[in-house]
Length: 377
Image (cartoon, rainbow, N blue to C red; front, side):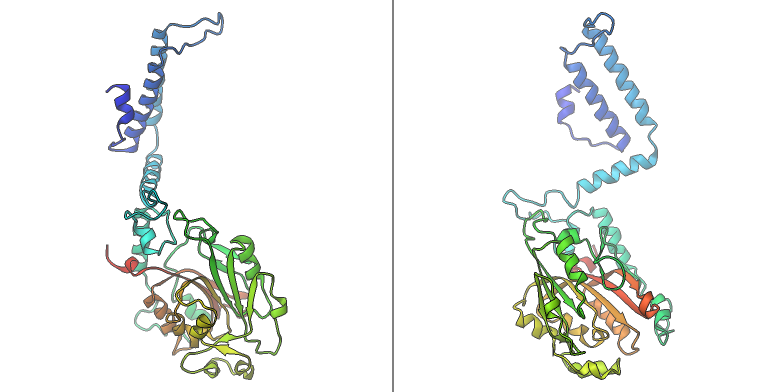
Protein backbone atom coordinates (compact mmCIF):
# COMPACT_ATOMS: atom_id res chain seq x y z
CA UNK A 1 0.00 0.00 0.00
CA UNK A 2 1.06 3.56 -0.62
CA UNK A 3 1.35 6.01 2.23
CA UNK A 4 -1.94 7.82 1.40
CA UNK A 5 -3.72 4.47 1.17
CA UNK A 6 -2.46 3.50 4.62
CA UNK A 7 -3.69 6.79 6.01
CA UNK A 8 -7.16 6.41 4.56
CA UNK A 9 -7.70 2.84 5.69
CA UNK A 10 -9.48 2.12 8.96
CA UNK A 11 -7.73 -0.22 11.32
CA UNK A 12 -9.73 -3.43 10.78
CA UNK A 13 -7.29 -5.85 12.37
CA UNK A 14 -7.60 -9.18 14.08
CA UNK A 15 -6.15 -7.90 17.31
CA UNK A 16 -4.71 -4.81 18.99
CA UNK A 17 -1.14 -5.95 18.37
CA UNK A 18 -1.57 -5.93 14.60
CA UNK A 19 -3.37 -2.60 14.77
CA UNK A 20 -0.49 -1.09 16.69
CA UNK A 21 2.09 -2.50 14.28
CA UNK A 22 0.30 -1.04 11.29
CA UNK A 23 -0.02 2.30 13.05
CA UNK A 24 3.67 2.47 13.83
CA UNK A 25 4.65 1.37 10.31
CA UNK A 26 2.47 4.14 8.97
CA UNK A 27 4.32 6.53 11.24
CA UNK A 28 7.65 5.37 9.86
CA UNK A 29 6.36 5.83 6.32
CA UNK A 30 5.50 9.40 7.25
CA UNK A 31 9.18 9.92 8.04
CA UNK A 32 10.27 8.31 4.80
CA UNK A 33 7.83 10.41 2.79
CA UNK A 34 9.36 13.64 4.06
CA UNK A 35 12.40 13.48 1.79
CA UNK A 36 13.49 16.90 2.84
CA UNK A 37 14.24 15.66 6.35
CA UNK A 38 17.92 15.34 7.13
CA UNK A 39 19.69 13.93 10.16
CA UNK A 40 22.33 16.24 11.55
CA UNK A 41 25.81 14.86 12.21
CA UNK A 42 26.90 15.93 15.69
CA UNK A 43 30.55 16.33 14.59
CA UNK A 44 30.34 18.29 11.42
CA UNK A 45 26.74 19.44 11.57
CA UNK A 46 26.38 18.08 8.03
CA UNK A 47 23.28 16.73 6.41
CA UNK A 48 23.27 12.96 6.00
CA UNK A 49 21.83 11.79 2.65
CA UNK A 50 18.23 10.63 2.32
CA UNK A 51 19.33 7.01 1.87
CA UNK A 52 20.70 7.01 5.41
CA UNK A 53 17.39 8.44 6.63
CA UNK A 54 15.62 5.55 4.97
CA UNK A 55 17.81 3.04 6.74
CA UNK A 56 17.33 4.72 10.12
CA UNK A 57 13.58 4.88 9.57
CA UNK A 58 13.48 1.20 8.70
CA UNK A 59 15.46 0.26 11.82
CA UNK A 60 13.16 2.36 14.02
CA UNK A 61 10.15 0.58 12.53
CA UNK A 62 11.69 -2.82 13.28
CA UNK A 63 12.40 -1.69 16.84
CA UNK A 64 8.78 -0.64 17.32
CA UNK A 65 7.58 -4.02 16.05
CA UNK A 66 9.79 -5.81 18.56
CA UNK A 67 8.50 -3.64 21.42
CA UNK A 68 4.88 -4.25 20.45
CA UNK A 69 5.43 -7.99 20.13
CA UNK A 70 6.49 -8.03 23.77
CA UNK A 71 3.27 -6.39 24.93
CA UNK A 72 1.45 -8.47 27.54
CA UNK A 73 -1.98 -9.97 26.78
CA UNK A 74 -3.48 -7.82 29.54
CA UNK A 75 -2.24 -4.62 27.88
CA UNK A 76 -3.67 -5.70 24.56
CA UNK A 77 -7.01 -6.53 26.17
CA UNK A 78 -7.09 -3.14 27.88
CA UNK A 79 -6.45 -1.34 24.61
CA UNK A 80 -9.17 -3.34 22.93
CA UNK A 81 -11.65 -2.55 25.71
CA UNK A 82 -10.79 1.16 25.56
CA UNK A 83 -11.33 1.15 21.81
CA UNK A 84 -14.67 -0.63 22.27
CA UNK A 85 -15.80 1.93 24.85
CA UNK A 86 -14.94 4.83 22.56
CA UNK A 87 -17.01 3.37 19.77
CA UNK A 88 -20.09 2.56 21.79
CA UNK A 89 -22.14 4.69 24.16
CA UNK A 90 -20.60 8.04 23.26
CA UNK A 91 -20.59 7.42 19.51
CA UNK A 92 -22.82 9.36 17.13
CA UNK A 93 -25.28 10.48 19.84
CA UNK A 94 -25.42 14.11 18.90
CA UNK A 95 -26.74 15.24 15.56
CA UNK A 96 -25.70 18.41 13.80
CA UNK A 97 -28.37 20.46 15.59
CA UNK A 98 -27.25 19.28 19.05
CA UNK A 99 -30.17 16.89 19.62
CA UNK A 100 -29.89 13.18 20.28
CA UNK A 101 -29.72 11.19 17.07
CA UNK A 102 -31.59 8.00 16.26
CA UNK A 103 -28.44 6.05 17.03
CA UNK A 104 -29.09 6.05 20.79
CA UNK A 105 -27.26 3.25 22.50
CA UNK A 106 -28.32 1.05 25.40
CA UNK A 107 -27.07 2.97 28.44
CA UNK A 108 -28.62 6.25 27.28
CA UNK A 109 -31.93 4.67 26.35
CA UNK A 110 -32.28 2.45 29.43
CA UNK A 111 -31.43 5.20 31.92
CA UNK A 112 -33.65 7.90 30.48
CA UNK A 113 -30.58 9.85 29.44
CA UNK A 114 -28.87 9.74 32.85
CA UNK A 115 -25.90 7.68 31.61
CA UNK A 116 -24.22 8.52 28.33
CA UNK A 117 -20.70 7.12 28.55
CA UNK A 118 -20.93 3.40 29.40
CA UNK A 119 -19.91 0.89 26.72
CA UNK A 120 -22.48 -1.55 25.43
CA UNK A 121 -20.43 -4.49 26.68
CA UNK A 122 -20.25 -3.07 30.22
CA UNK A 123 -23.93 -2.16 30.15
CA UNK A 124 -24.79 -5.71 29.17
CA UNK A 125 -22.87 -7.01 32.20
CA UNK A 126 -24.71 -4.54 34.44
CA UNK A 127 -28.07 -5.75 33.11
CA UNK A 128 -27.07 -9.36 33.67
CA UNK A 129 -26.18 -8.60 37.29
CA UNK A 130 -29.66 -7.21 37.92
CA UNK A 131 -31.28 -10.05 36.02
CA UNK A 132 -29.54 -12.67 38.18
CA UNK A 133 -29.84 -10.88 41.53
CA UNK A 134 -30.79 -12.85 44.63
CA UNK A 135 -32.79 -10.96 47.21
CA UNK A 136 -32.61 -13.40 50.11
CA UNK A 137 -30.15 -15.73 51.76
CA UNK A 138 -32.99 -18.01 52.86
CA UNK A 139 -34.97 -18.38 49.66
CA UNK A 140 -37.38 -20.85 51.20
CA UNK A 141 -38.37 -18.36 53.93
CA UNK A 142 -37.27 -14.69 53.55
CA UNK A 143 -38.63 -13.88 57.01
CA UNK A 144 -35.88 -15.83 58.78
CA UNK A 145 -34.31 -13.52 61.43
CA UNK A 146 -36.80 -10.76 60.66
CA UNK A 147 -37.33 -10.22 64.39
CA UNK A 148 -33.66 -9.18 64.53
CA UNK A 149 -33.43 -6.21 62.18
CA UNK A 150 -29.64 -6.08 61.99
CA UNK A 151 -29.48 -9.81 61.24
CA UNK A 152 -32.21 -9.64 58.62
CA UNK A 153 -30.61 -6.76 56.74
CA UNK A 154 -27.33 -8.67 56.69
CA UNK A 155 -29.03 -11.51 54.81
CA UNK A 156 -31.41 -9.70 52.46
CA UNK A 157 -31.53 -7.16 49.65
CA UNK A 158 -27.94 -6.36 48.75
CA UNK A 159 -27.06 -3.79 46.05
CA UNK A 160 -27.46 -5.06 42.49
CA UNK A 161 -26.12 -2.03 40.61
CA UNK A 162 -23.00 0.12 40.69
CA UNK A 163 -22.63 3.82 39.96
CA UNK A 164 -19.00 4.33 38.97
CA UNK A 165 -18.79 7.87 40.34
CA UNK A 166 -21.15 7.74 43.31
CA UNK A 167 -20.27 10.17 46.09
CA UNK A 168 -21.28 10.68 49.68
CA UNK A 169 -22.85 14.12 49.66
CA UNK A 170 -22.68 15.98 52.94
CA UNK A 171 -19.43 14.70 54.44
CA UNK A 172 -18.98 12.22 57.26
CA UNK A 173 -21.21 10.94 60.05
CA UNK A 174 -24.99 10.53 60.19
CA UNK A 175 -26.98 12.65 57.76
CA UNK A 176 -25.07 12.65 54.45
CA UNK A 177 -26.27 10.39 51.63
CA UNK A 178 -24.72 8.42 48.78
CA UNK A 179 -25.71 9.94 45.42
CA UNK A 180 -25.27 8.21 42.08
CA UNK A 181 -22.84 10.14 39.86
CA UNK A 182 -23.70 13.65 41.08
CA UNK A 183 -21.56 15.18 38.32
CA UNK A 184 -24.32 14.18 35.90
CA UNK A 185 -26.62 16.68 37.62
CA UNK A 186 -24.24 19.58 37.12
CA UNK A 187 -25.52 22.43 34.96
CA UNK A 188 -25.10 21.91 31.22
CA UNK A 189 -23.11 18.70 31.58
CA UNK A 190 -25.19 16.69 29.13
CA UNK A 191 -24.03 16.33 25.55
CA UNK A 192 -27.53 17.22 24.37
CA UNK A 193 -27.39 20.39 26.50
CA UNK A 194 -30.81 19.69 27.99
CA UNK A 195 -29.72 19.38 31.64
CA UNK A 196 -29.85 22.98 32.77
CA UNK A 197 -31.34 22.48 36.23
CA UNK A 198 -32.05 19.86 38.86
CA UNK A 199 -34.78 19.29 41.42
CA UNK A 200 -34.05 18.01 44.94
CA UNK A 201 -36.46 16.91 47.69
CA UNK A 202 -35.09 16.46 51.21
CA UNK A 203 -37.62 15.05 53.67
CA UNK A 204 -36.85 15.18 57.39
CA UNK A 205 -34.21 17.70 58.42
CA UNK A 206 -34.85 18.53 62.07
CA UNK A 207 -32.79 21.67 61.54
CA UNK A 208 -29.83 19.88 59.94
CA UNK A 209 -29.10 21.24 56.45
CA UNK A 210 -25.69 19.69 55.79
CA UNK A 211 -27.07 17.69 52.86
CA UNK A 212 -28.67 20.74 51.27
CA UNK A 213 -25.49 22.81 51.66
CA UNK A 214 -23.45 20.03 50.08
CA UNK A 215 -25.85 19.83 47.14
CA UNK A 216 -25.29 23.52 46.41
CA UNK A 217 -21.53 23.22 46.82
CA UNK A 218 -20.83 19.91 45.07
CA UNK A 219 -23.54 19.86 42.40
CA UNK A 220 -24.42 23.50 41.92
CA UNK A 221 -26.61 26.42 42.90
CA UNK A 222 -28.75 25.78 39.84
CA UNK A 223 -30.48 22.99 41.80
CA UNK A 224 -33.93 23.77 43.11
CA UNK A 225 -33.96 22.38 46.66
CA UNK A 226 -37.06 21.73 48.77
CA UNK A 227 -36.77 20.61 52.39
CA UNK A 228 -39.69 19.22 54.41
CA UNK A 229 -40.15 18.72 58.14
CA UNK A 230 -43.41 18.26 60.10
CA UNK A 231 -41.91 19.89 63.21
CA UNK A 232 -43.49 17.25 65.43
CA UNK A 233 -41.68 18.53 68.52
CA UNK A 234 -43.13 22.01 67.99
CA UNK A 235 -39.73 23.44 67.05
CA UNK A 236 -39.59 25.60 63.94
CA UNK A 237 -36.66 25.20 61.57
CA UNK A 238 -37.54 27.49 58.69
CA UNK A 239 -35.34 30.34 59.90
CA UNK A 240 -32.34 27.97 59.85
CA UNK A 241 -32.72 27.08 56.18
CA UNK A 242 -29.75 28.27 54.09
CA UNK A 243 -30.18 30.72 51.27
CA UNK A 244 -31.51 28.97 48.19
CA UNK A 245 -33.34 26.25 50.15
CA UNK A 246 -37.14 26.24 50.05
CA UNK A 247 -38.34 25.10 53.48
CA UNK A 248 -41.81 23.60 54.03
CA UNK A 249 -43.15 22.82 57.49
CA UNK A 250 -44.93 19.59 56.65
CA UNK A 251 -44.06 15.93 56.43
CA UNK A 252 -45.41 13.05 54.34
CA UNK A 253 -48.23 10.73 55.31
CA UNK A 254 -50.04 7.68 53.95
CA UNK A 255 -52.50 8.35 51.14
CA UNK A 256 -55.01 5.87 52.55
CA UNK A 257 -54.47 5.85 56.31
CA UNK A 258 -53.32 9.36 57.13
CA UNK A 259 -50.63 10.32 59.60
CA UNK A 260 -52.03 7.98 62.29
CA UNK A 261 -50.68 5.03 60.29
CA UNK A 262 -47.23 5.63 61.75
CA UNK A 263 -48.52 4.42 65.11
CA UNK A 264 -48.08 0.91 63.74
CA UNK A 265 -44.33 1.30 63.98
CA UNK A 266 -43.70 3.97 66.63
CA UNK A 267 -45.54 4.47 69.91
CA UNK A 268 -44.64 8.13 70.09
CA UNK A 269 -47.62 10.44 70.50
CA UNK A 270 -45.65 13.25 68.87
CA UNK A 271 -45.93 11.34 65.59
CA UNK A 272 -49.53 12.53 65.37
CA UNK A 273 -48.60 16.19 65.78
CA UNK A 274 -47.33 18.53 63.13
CA UNK A 275 -48.41 19.15 59.57
CA UNK A 276 -48.63 16.42 56.94
CA UNK A 277 -49.48 16.05 53.28
CA UNK A 278 -49.42 13.10 50.92
CA UNK A 279 -46.70 12.93 48.31
CA UNK A 280 -49.19 13.67 45.56
CA UNK A 281 -50.57 16.70 47.42
CA UNK A 282 -47.03 17.98 47.82
CA UNK A 283 -46.20 17.58 44.15
CA UNK A 284 -49.39 19.39 43.14
CA UNK A 285 -48.91 22.17 45.71
CA UNK A 286 -45.40 22.94 44.47
CA UNK A 287 -46.30 22.68 40.78
CA UNK A 288 -44.00 19.73 40.09
CA UNK A 289 -46.50 17.43 38.38
CA UNK A 290 -44.87 15.77 35.36
CA UNK A 291 -41.35 16.72 36.42
CA UNK A 292 -38.34 14.61 37.34
CA UNK A 293 -37.15 14.88 40.94
CA UNK A 294 -33.49 14.11 40.46
CA UNK A 295 -32.83 13.25 44.10
CA UNK A 296 -35.52 12.31 46.63
CA UNK A 297 -33.85 12.00 50.02
CA UNK A 298 -36.05 10.90 52.91
CA UNK A 299 -35.33 10.13 56.57
CA UNK A 300 -38.66 10.36 58.37
CA UNK A 301 -38.24 7.92 61.26
CA UNK A 302 -40.58 5.23 59.96
CA UNK A 303 -42.94 7.07 57.62
CA UNK A 304 -41.29 5.24 54.68
CA UNK A 305 -43.33 2.13 55.49
CA UNK A 306 -46.67 3.95 55.18
CA UNK A 307 -45.86 6.36 52.33
CA UNK A 308 -43.68 4.48 49.83
CA UNK A 309 -46.54 3.32 47.62
CA UNK A 310 -47.48 6.96 47.09
CA UNK A 311 -43.98 7.73 45.78
CA UNK A 312 -44.68 5.86 42.54
CA UNK A 313 -47.99 7.50 41.60
CA UNK A 314 -47.30 11.01 42.84
CA UNK A 315 -47.34 12.57 39.38
CA UNK A 316 -43.56 13.08 39.30
CA UNK A 317 -40.67 10.73 38.51
CA UNK A 318 -38.21 10.12 41.34
CA UNK A 319 -34.87 9.44 39.61
CA UNK A 320 -32.92 8.62 42.79
CA UNK A 321 -34.42 7.62 46.12
CA UNK A 322 -32.12 7.87 49.14
CA UNK A 323 -33.92 6.52 52.19
CA UNK A 324 -33.08 5.34 55.67
CA UNK A 325 -35.30 2.39 56.57
CA UNK A 326 -36.05 1.79 60.23
CA UNK A 327 -36.25 -1.72 61.68
CA UNK A 328 -38.12 -4.56 59.96
CA UNK A 329 -41.92 -4.44 60.25
CA UNK A 330 -42.84 -7.96 59.18
CA UNK A 331 -45.88 -7.00 57.13
CA UNK A 332 -44.18 -4.19 55.21
CA UNK A 333 -40.42 -4.59 54.87
CA UNK A 334 -40.41 -7.20 52.08
CA UNK A 335 -43.21 -5.51 50.08
CA UNK A 336 -41.24 -2.26 50.38
CA UNK A 337 -38.16 -3.66 48.63
CA UNK A 338 -40.01 -5.76 46.06
CA UNK A 339 -42.21 -2.74 45.39
CA UNK A 340 -39.11 -0.69 44.62
CA UNK A 341 -37.93 -3.35 42.18
CA UNK A 342 -41.34 -3.66 40.55
CA UNK A 343 -41.36 0.11 40.02
CA UNK A 344 -38.10 -0.13 38.06
CA UNK A 345 -35.54 0.73 40.73
CA UNK A 346 -32.13 -0.85 41.22
CA UNK A 347 -30.12 -0.64 44.45
CA UNK A 348 -26.72 1.02 44.14
CA UNK A 349 -25.80 1.48 47.79
CA UNK A 350 -26.48 0.03 51.23
CA UNK A 351 -25.04 1.46 54.46
CA UNK A 352 -26.10 0.28 57.93
CA UNK A 353 -26.48 2.91 60.65
CA UNK A 354 -24.05 1.43 63.14
CA UNK A 355 -23.53 4.45 65.37
CA UNK A 356 -27.12 5.10 66.38
CA UNK A 357 -28.98 1.89 65.52
CA UNK A 358 -26.44 -0.94 65.58
CA UNK A 359 -27.43 -1.90 62.05
CA UNK A 360 -31.18 -2.04 62.74
CA UNK A 361 -31.61 1.01 60.49
CA UNK A 362 -30.03 1.06 57.03
CA UNK A 363 -29.41 3.73 54.41
CA UNK A 364 -30.47 2.48 50.97
CA UNK A 365 -29.95 4.23 47.63
CA UNK A 366 -32.09 3.41 44.59
CA UNK A 367 -31.92 4.49 40.95
CA UNK A 368 -34.87 4.52 38.55
CA UNK A 369 -34.26 2.89 35.14
CA UNK A 370 -36.49 2.58 32.11
CA UNK A 371 -38.58 -0.50 31.29
CA UNK A 372 -36.22 -1.31 28.41
CA UNK A 373 -33.43 -2.03 30.91
CA UNK A 374 -35.34 -5.01 32.30
CA UNK A 375 -36.33 -6.52 28.96
CA UNK A 376 -34.40 -9.26 27.22
CA UNK A 377 -31.90 -8.04 24.62
